[in-house]
Length: 351
Image (cartoon, rainbow, N blue to C red; front, side, top):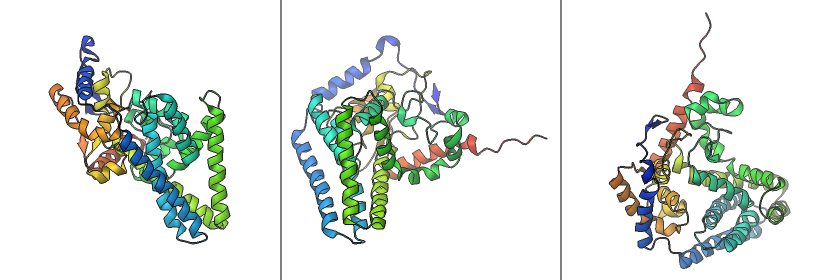
């Protein structure tokens, strides 16, 4: 079976579907890697909260100064780290039950950084269920970019226009991701159906009003707008770069690909090698394969789960991809460039 030119192993017989993962889960559970880590998360949340409060304190203490652009960069990084904490909350890595996860997730997401927790959780849950699936994963929907040659050939409008050179536009476009998250959250909040919509809307509005009021009370209009642009662009670039190496450039699936849960998650994910700095910068998502197999596993346990998962994949003959930081981005960008080839081909002229 091939998908996007990538050879995939044949799916297991129907009678064995799920049993391979059950064996892996048993090994991981016996190693104690699904147990909660309250001490770790208390320390991590305290550090992120201190950075969040410290950055805003520096903003108000500096006042009308061009040094505020440095604060904007720092705050963009801090916002991304807050988003990574919200990610772990959504997966119930911190609390075992839903209620405290949702309460703190909405405070952190909606009020803290202006991102709809409910909207993002729904979107991310669908991504986890069907990663890199052209029809079911919202992260590879061809809204702006195209992720497969089939999407490129069917594309129209903006994706068709950008798709020609999307590999070169990828990182510049990520600077808009922060704005996109805010806009997508607002769209979700004005539509009925979102759980706790009024609460989320109130928290979201409090963030937007407080954020804009702080900027324009402390800074003159020109500097306030420049601060906003730098802050949100750094936030989007950092957060987008955190998620980009994990699946981009990996096989995209369609309804024709019948894979069990284990293979579906492993074959569409890529790990990123690196030490403690990469681990901290990516919030543990550099162990993407382990995270997709065990979404509720606390992030500090993902590193310990890796040899178990990698060894088990070797037993079954399942490809397990791991790359360095630069290599992962190179693979992703090369894939984006390759799938845009049909759009760069000049149409044949009629004689």
